[in-house]
Length: 136
Image (cartoon, rainbow, N blue to C red; front, side):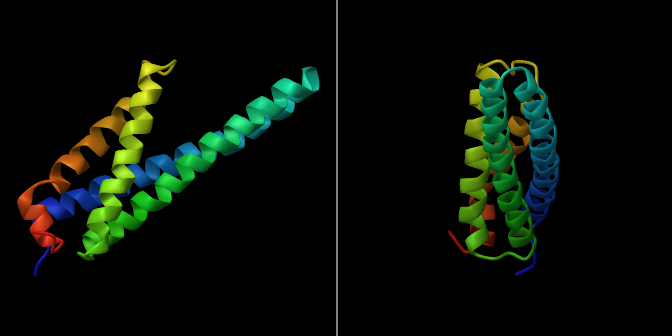
């Protein structure tokens, strides 16, 4: 079966999402580590908390980036497992981003994450897309 246009769009959106999330992971891990080091000079407990949060958020961003990139490849090549991976990955990104928007990140880049993951999930649930992955 040839790849439908909708699946191509899913792959491209997920590739963009994965690359953006990879950049976020690098920022969290790099900048977070630097801030933790500076904070530790003034207050070791604050440095430990900032460092721990940077590792947590950076690790989550890195994990979802890798899964998003893997889904992009799987969608591009119409692998049957890619549908489930795409739903799981983009649902995780969507929930995490909605929680962040409800918190202190009200006017952040999370709106782009919400838009991309929402669009990917919407398309993944459509019958033609599910059929392309052999699910309907």
